[in-house]
Amino acid sequence: MVEVTWTARARKDLDGISAYLAEGSPYYAQQTEWGIFQRAIQLEKQPRSGHPAKEIGDPTVRKIGYGRYRMIDWLSDPGHIAFVAVVHSGRNMTRSALRSRRKEK
Image 1 (tube, helix red, strand yellow):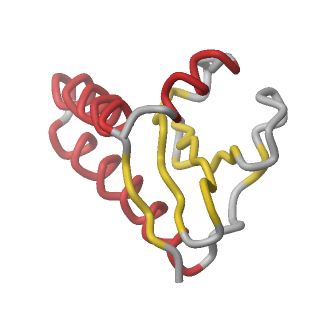
Image 2 (cartoon, rainbow, N blue to C red; image 1 turned 120 degrees about the horizontal axis):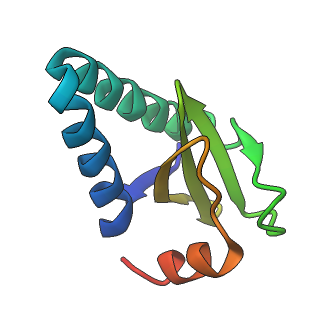
């Protein structure tokens, strides 16, 4: 089993998504946040689930989806995965944006 952590930026992304969704539906916001956390827990047991983020060009950067959102994770070493971003599926993440997020703790 691997350790799964969240960078401060990824947590801020999720908080922003939840706050935005809560304006229209607190229930939907809670369900979305819960679902995203469940997908993260899944990675502890199945660290290779999801898909390579081909647009990034780095095999250690992967993405998994939940609803309309993509969770971008980085397999920093065989025993550790760090979530670096949670973004709407319509939003593009650039290589440079993800590189700067990987440096954060």
